[in-house]
Image (tube, rainbow, N blue to C red; front, side):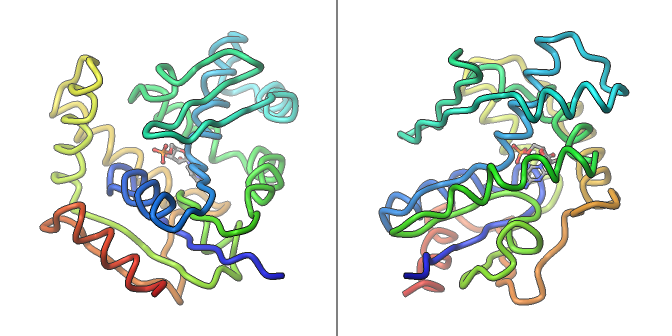
Length: 218
Ligand code: C5P
């Protein structure tokens, strides 16, 4: 029996997480937050005090790390049995994630971990290369974006709500730098799949985006 897959790709802070979780919940499908896998690798690298230039050591960690995810209202992440959810959410973790995610061998090692999420009754997969590399045969594909200024504002709000320190100007710079790194890397860069539905959510309410994605599937 084929497993239906919906991929939602796009740049940082476009709302992929909120939309994906809501759509997965509505459909009763599984949810893959592929960014949290790269974020967990970043946390693991920091924990082991590994130099980010030390590619061989990063690859070893990617191979050895045991990840568990619990998808309730928030996604809970456990690394080797330890709850690292609070660490994965930090903006700095996202930046380190985008550095280790640019290593081709790291992406190869983490590919199967992501494919394993594809199970009945269906999967919503969010990331940068879900529709292009990890699930190129997905039946439903979305490319969700928003202006950099709007994405920075949303990220700022999210961090403040979670009780973190945040600075809008710094977040805007970091988002632009991360966009550049994610789009310019050689392996699996952030790109829209040719068969994806393009949604610019800059002036859209979250519910309107969720409805548009659900309409694609109905
Ligand atoms: O989506 P999120 O901000 O959690 O992702 C963190 C980083 O992980 C991204 O900036 C990107 O570099 C990397 N990533 C990736 N491929 C994915 C998901 C995330 O390279 N499918």
